[in-house]
Image (spheres, helix red, strand yellow):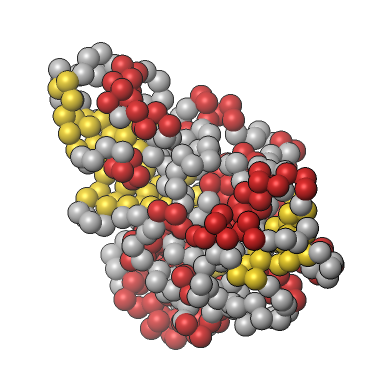
Length: 375
Length: 77
């Protein structure tokens, strides 16, 4: 029996045919992990919390930035610079204090993925890059965890349920669909290609719906199907997936081979001879007399860095303005360390070993977090 | 024989029409080659083919009126 106060909270779904107190009880006992508290993760988290999923885990290492707010609806302008997992937890607790929320303020790596994922019954992938997507898929296959996968691009979204047996006993995963990650430049990210803010709102909500359907055993979840939704036309295109030999071959077969995978190299992230530095190295290197620190973010990007001396040369004008730099040691940073790495590669190509070029790993977001400056 | 092609995601940047018909023969491998001839940039993109709403993982025969979807992976979240 569900207690009176809980009954009232969930009454509108408990009275549904096929759902009932049994369905609610199943939700309250379920543990769902949402990886990425961004455009997809925010709505998924809100609806899972509202529906009364008993334990919700959130994995995200990022802080809230201004450019997140057009689609990441859990956050407000006041929250810029704060950790996403902290703000999400606060807001979700206000929405539903009856559930347990566990935060993982970290980047998922193959060294921590299996430990974290094994604590949950269902995994929702709301990440924004292929390295994470392949890592999560492979971990879910190893652990035999149902995975609710979704991704968005411009005006379209994809969603699928992996690692759940269909009525023929077959289960499909992301590698059956795309055995290999795309090479650099084969697919543009949202940062490069753009996305209409409401789109991940719809797709993330669909992920929550799929999780609820799986947990309560109602309806027909998208098991072994890939659904593509177009927000401009409201067209939905569903295709059936089948096992692929190539996918089977490429997937790590055991924990040791999973740990040996380098997902970031696999997805052509950080393939360069440029040196990436952490906060401590940054602290030492920038004190060198010959050093200059350059912020390659565009004008208006927050948080501003005012506590150390730095020069602003945005990426958009980087190649034309950089030739004036006389210093021997050049330390570059941006928001997350991706653009600065690219900028460092440009300099490396231009100057070779005649200049020392460094890129701050994890960018200003990680650095400020480590300094303990949250805002 | 005529087949219908439906294009998704960023592939629509390469092929302007989201939907079009093509005179094609034989199988999905031939069709891919024809498409890459018509749209050379497509050869550099990752995508999978769904034939009549079923993903094909090996070369498959086409029939009159087959519907072929070109589906790229998305990464955004």
